[in-house]
Image 1 (cartoon, rainbow over the protein chains, first blue to last red):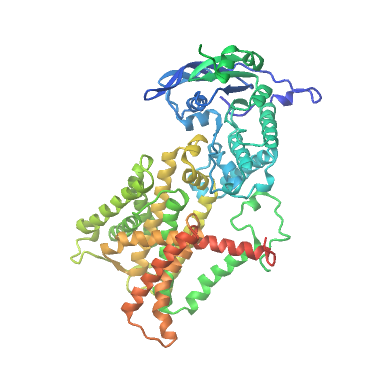
Image 2 (cartoon, chains in turn orange, yellow):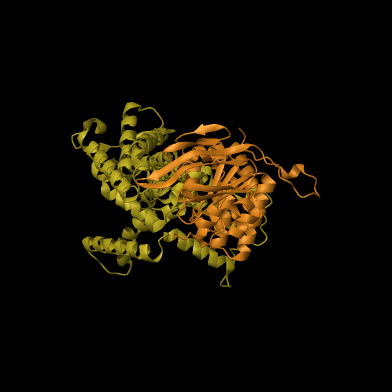
Length: 278
Length: 358
C-alpha cells in the first residue's frame, strides 16, 4: 500500500482539460451506527468513496456529518459497522493508525499548533515520513540533516502551491482565520494523504476566500489525485465541485448521488426546508 | 544598527535551518564561549566561580531539562528535585562501585538512571493531564525524597544520612572532592552544560521537537497527523529526567561537595519551575536567563548594599530577596508570560529594524 498520491493529471495531454479517471472504491462505510448514551448520532449509514473523486457530505445542523468524519479516521469507534479502507475492514482503529494509512484531516474549528510557526506546523505534518532515529536527531548529523532538508523541500512545494510563502515564519496564532484554514490544509497535505477529510473548509470565509479554497481543493484533487471527502454548508460550492453527494439527516442517510440527483430529491428538500404536518 | 542581517543570503535549506542563521548571533555566541572557556577561568575569583557561575550553570541545565518537559511538551512536573536526586544518588553509588571509571562517564550514566525513573513516573501522563499530572509528579517527588531518607544503602549507611563526594581525578587532576580546584570544576561543568544544551537545541529543532510542541499545542491534532501521544510524552519524560539527573549529579559532585535529602526536596522543584517560568517556557535561552536571575539576584542583593556603604543584616537581605523574587514572578506571569527569553527576542527585533518602529 503506497501513500504516494498518484499524479493523475500529469498523464493527460497538456492542452486537454484534465479528465480525472475515477478509480475503484477506496473507502467504504458499511452499516455504521454510533450513539452517545441515548443519542443516536449515526444509524446504519453506508456509502462509499471512489478513488480520486470529490465526495461531499451535507445535511442540516446536527445531522451527524462531523461524527461521520470522526468515525472514518478513528476518533470515534462506531458501535456497529465497519470502515473499509482499500478493501480491509478496520475495527477500533486509532487516529494515528488512520494517518499512517494515508488519511489526512482538517477540522471545522481550526486545530493548528498555535505556538509554532507555519513552517513548523507543516513540517510536523511530515513527522510520520521522517525515519531517522533519536540519536541521529540528537546529533543532527549526516542522515538526519539530509532528511530534514529533503522534507523541507517537500514542504516548500506545498507552501508554494497554497501561496503562503509570505507567512512562513509567522506563528500560526497570529494569522487571520482564512489563512489559518489554508495552513491547516497545508499540514494535511504534507502527510501526502490518499484520502483527505475536510470538515467545513470554507466555513466563515468571505466569497474570495471561498473561491481560493475551492480552487485549492480542486487543484489538490487534480494535481495529486487525492480523494476528497468534504463537509460543506455552502450548497453552491458543494454542487459545483463535488462528484457525488451523500445527504445525512438525524444520523440517517437520506440521499446519495450526483449533485443533480440530490438537488431534486424530495427527501433532501424536505430535510432542508421542512415539511408541513397537516 | 549593527544587528542587521542585510546581505546575508541563504542558498540552501540547510543554511536556512542552521542553529544560528544570523552572522551576528554566531559571532556573539563564539565570543561568549571564548570568554566562558578562557577568560573566566583565568580571571574570575574562587567566590565568583564557586558561588555564582557553577550553580548558575548547574541549575540552568536542570531548568533546561524541566523546560523540555513543561515548556516544549506541555507536561507540568513538580518532580524535578526528585529526579535530580536520582541522578545524584546513582552517581554516588556508581562512584562507590566503580572507583576507577572516569567520573564524567559516571555523571552522564547517572542521567540514564534518572531517565528510567522519570519514564516510570511519566507512565500516568497519557491518562491524566494538567494539574492532575502535576499532582502525580508531586507524588513522585515525595516518594523519591522518602527513598533518599529511608534507604540507607543509597548513602552507603552513612550515619549522618548525607553523601560525601569522594575525590576522583581526570588525567591526574582532581575533578571532584575537597581537593579539586574551582577552575577545574567550573570547566567540567561548563563543558557538560554546553554540550548537552547543544544536543537539546538539535532535538527541539528537529522532528522530535516538533512532535513535542504539537502535543503541547493540540494533542488531538497531533494524533491526527500520526503522532503517538504516549511514546512522545514518555520520550519527553525520559530526556527531561536525563537532563535533571545529570544536573543533580553535578550539583553534588561539582558544586556542593556533599548533599543530604534536603538538597532534593520539593523546594528545589519549585525553584527550578520558577526559573523556567521567569526565563521563558519553551526557550533554551530562557533556562539560562531564569537560572541566572534566580541564583544571581540573592547574591547581588547581598553584595550590592556593601558597595554603597549600606550595611544590612544577612537576615534582612534574605527576606528582601524572597520578597523581590516573589514580586518578580507575579509581574512576569501578568506582563510577559513568555518570560525573559521573549523580552530578549523583542529587543532583538527592535534592534533589527532600528531606527524604524517596524
